[in-house]
Length: 111
Image 1: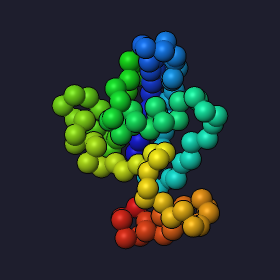
Image 2 (image 1 turned 180 degrees about the vertical axis):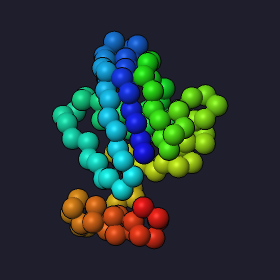
Image 3 (image 1 turned 90 degrees about the vertical axis):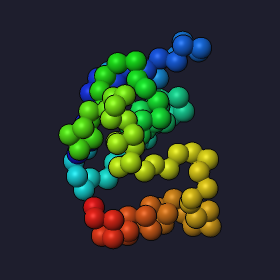
Image 4 (image 1 turned 30 degrees about the vertical axis):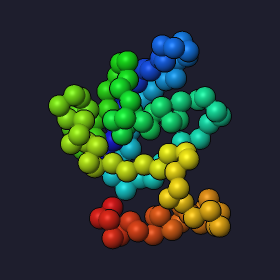
């Protein structure tokens, strides 16, 4: 299970608030998509969940492990993400077909 509670992230250089009190729970087996306009905080949220960015406040809990300095690497070993600019997609097929191909691997990955 993934639990995100009251995440807040402000980028100091631009003074832009990327996330303001974001909370969500994702249960085992659920598939979630993040949708929103440019600058809505989707990538920031994913980077915080993956341990690539540290929030200003709030918490991330994955498989009952709270993300922190001592647990960040342990949690990062359990996560995979495809961020923009990634070359791991099949460009000749649609986004839907890429998604369907990815989730077809679920039984082999133990999801």
